[in-house]
Length: 377
Image 1 (tube, rainbow, N blue to C red):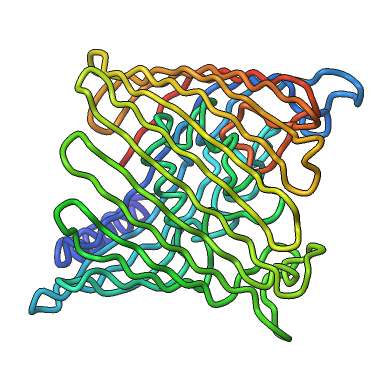
Image 2 (tube, rainbow, N blue to C red):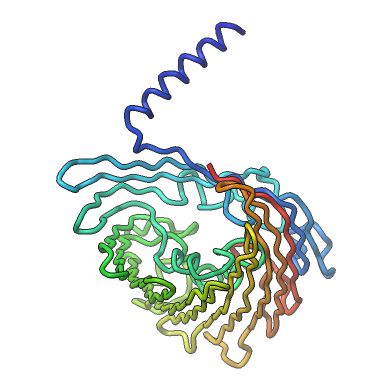
């Protein structure tokens, strides 16, 4: 036992020296754990017999922010040029046996180091990185949603990025991106994905590949913030769905916000279309963040409407949400939230930030409540 402890001490000493020699390398992460209760969850996700109104109560990981661990770093190459990298993986802090939500082995990202993983260069010209990257639209929605795509009130419950039934647009492999320097509050992002895949068709090796273009313009100066972004995926037929040859998915988002001091108000609007399919999917949100003591009250209202393909039915989901975060320190906070989703015309959304797909019962309302703690390190 003494020898084992000595060996661990020696390893720790060398590890500490390595990090001290290059202080730009940082180990970081989030552990988020809470008790959640959801109603209106599909029986197949709760073990409840079909034909009944199901619910779920349990300990869940990543309610406010997906639990994760990562490494990131920056090396000064001289002349104002630096190399940067990031490798981040989701972790299931509550274990993988989680019903009513995300039960994948890594709980977010889809696999080991599958949240983001990239390397690149940054300097006066801006930043160029390549690897697995967030869609700029996802980063924008985090910035403008009072719940930051977390808690039971997450705009992600209605977002076209993962509720469109066509593709998951949160992140993409094989992506090269450029981010401009800040010009008086304005920054621009342009990204290109060489080969879009999914679980059924991860890589297309014959014919035309499915490629993607991501564009974003952001402005932030004083109390004013605004953004616009555009996402496009070509050759949708390669993603395993019945699309016309050469069809494209096109989505754009508009954002705006103003910080009044006593409250910050934000809003966003999304629209998604696919060539060869009539109509479009639309979603919007209006939110507010109100500082109260060492925390803040969060509130939002939003709606999703699917007029794509079958305009007569237009599945619709409306969400109302309120929450509160309380900071115990710069790295630790408590949180609670409640949300209500009203489904109609066949919509089956659930008030669960862990759900990457629609897990609800068609036309059944869903309620979500959570109480937990988040620690960043």
